[in-house]
Image (cartoon, rainbow, N blue to C red; front, side, top):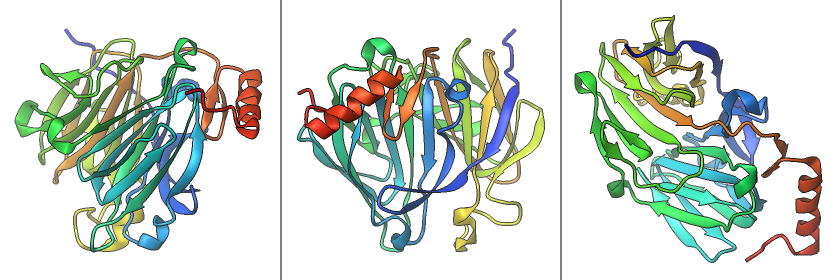
Length: 301
């Protein structure tokens, strides 16, 4: 019989200022990496005011990690030191492996009503792949399959496999599963998980009970609805849940549709030395990276 995971930790996203002045909500990041291993950071950059996101994220470096940008509304223009240029819009994903070093920029642009919605996830790379050759994968919405779950629920499979449906992003070291899950009102589902893997859920719409433990976890606050036209809900906190080990999680939605990201990956269990956009295994490696930035030798290819 499958072992249902229990909830280890629940937290709310927090207001953060990043880039050239982008207002966003941080679900986790710059805390204790072991809790989320192999993931480092999850930012919720949904907003309704262009002044709060238009400055974007001008040219900046990364090394030792992968950044995954998933857009729901609006668009993000990307450029990098490998010569990649592109724009991802509603439903698209950008999966950038910084590896030995990359310099890039991301500039968001909202819909005609100002709406900008999306998430950015950072995934760590193990020591053996910290200095791998950088790469860039741009996945359009039509390439991302949907798997049908119990009770009319469904999930977009960005990476990994669920119910025999495999996502388009391949050859990722930490073997992640990244789903965007929608559950109809008053519906219970059991979502299989890989035993021994870290498992996280980020609720960004609706209310639900997870693993029959605490009731309910919600976005936005009770009495407002993210899908209404009222803008007051746009800056509410999303709920992040961290689960212990097991074979599945159970989810029961309340009186409205539930929307959440499910993210899982194989823990790396290595030392983390982290400063800003660069994540290595030691302080010495960090110093070397920043020395190379100053000397103009950061980019290896």
